[in-house]
Image (cartoon, rainbow, N blue to C red; front, side, top):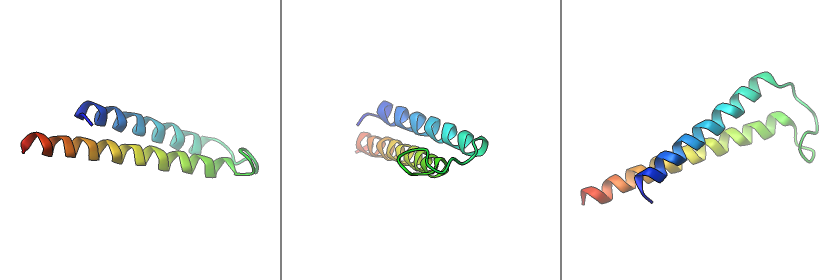
Length: 70
């Protein structure tokens, strides 16, 4: 991947994390929001997804930088 792709992944991951964290702090818990899963648990999964995208973006940037140095 190119470093630009890593930057996009980082920003998208951070945006997903911020939206899910904001919703987690402001929304009350609904017992069965998504197929029997509570809303708070779905938002925690969204936070984890955003963090995983952020980590993938960082790894992409690091590997591209190492490749350019060699």
